[in-house]
Image (tube, rainbow, N blue to C red; front, side):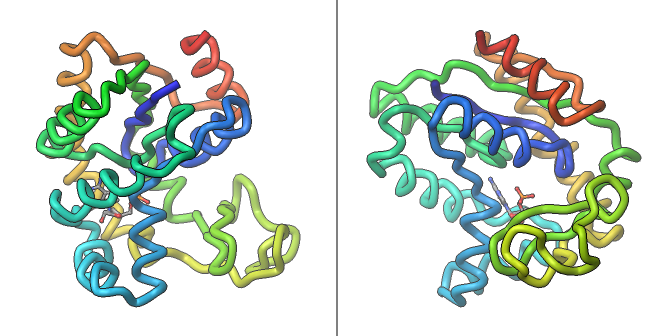
Length: 213
Ligand code: AMP
């Protein structure tokens, strides 16, 4: 199964991707996670990406396309993959199309998760991430047992710089201008499946599952 998850920041793409990984045993490929790991490592790519990420801007297309090209070469992608947070621009979608055509791989579906702007802001300003394992919490909707500490590994929880309200508004503006046009693009390709992204996490997952089966 080869999937793309599309949706604004905070739409729950990462959460749903993790549940799909469990169910279909295929890897989640999140450009955001790969970039954050590069920032943490302090690699030249990470240092360059950080400047964009902290401002809520998109990292240049050539950087993320290169990341995806390398990642798709790995053996675990042979059974399929879930792209989470890529593509985010038409240029990325076109590059992906060429890349997959060369490998003779077909996309099965593009799932677009729909959540309105105020809900996204409510979700993201309360989001806390574990510095150590990347697990995510929400101060109201899914708080950790002990404030500031990860239930899974005991790591310290922090607020991503790009989860501050001002940066979220910038990310949403960029989403509308650069990523939302992909909804039309994949509609034209006959691949788009739209899912309402509000409600219980499991409920949203059921909607996705029913589309995929
Ligand atoms: P995410 O975790 O998917 O919200 O991504 C966090 C940040 O990483 C974004 O705000 C961008 O700065 C950068 N990023 C992730 N994926 C991409 C992409 N496909 N194209 C450009 N920038 C990206």
